[in-house]
Length: 308
Image 1 (cartoon, rainbow, N blue to C red):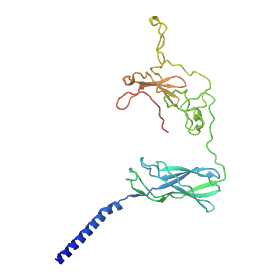
Image 2 (spheres, rainbow, N blue to C red):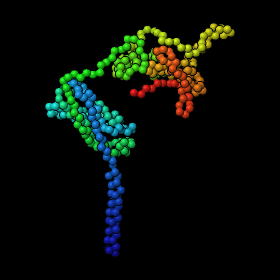
Image 3 (cartoon, one colour):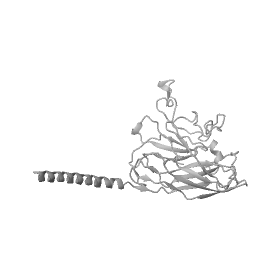
């Protein structure tokens, strides 16, 4: 009887050990399968060389973007070795979802600096095709050192260009940066006589603040037949404007070209809508065509969109 009890105890112990080993074997693959990825951090400086006491912009980050479901990488720093041997570390910054960001720095002494990016270890919270599943460890890493040359001489930058003093045409060369104050698009459905949106670079100023200050006519173009009805209808008129059938809904201006719907909005999807493009400076009609989608359905022009 005693022998049987001993055998029973030994069997119980063996079973417990077997279950414990099985648990470890099951848990072990999960612990060792966590993926690790090197971020390949980078740094660049614009301008380089740079004049002393003049800002330069460090472009820092990882070659990998972050998934759409999470923000950029966190707490990157820039380590700077100055010509006198001192080391400076700039405050931590977060990147955008492209994986990079900009850090401005103003060197205060002439000579050669060395700079590099530090990418601290962090764990992804979402999956993507670049660095794998959520939970992937993005490893701690440094970029290569970049030499930043700081000189006393003033570096000539690309000069600005004055605003035009005579008739000019579009498109405007992208290098004429100063012309932005007279070259805004109008992508909204409200009338251009409404308040203009503020400038991106100067919120205190509207981006078309240099528009003409007096009423003027560039060209005339008939949109619809209208006038006095007369006869049995007496003093009443026909086609009385856009009180109930808007003629100008959805019109936009892009690159000096006016785009508008040929027909009023009352017909809705029952009207085969046609969009007309007109040169805003001359009134010349450039083209008119149905606004269709790949599936062949007809739509109305409702807003404008530019990519930059």
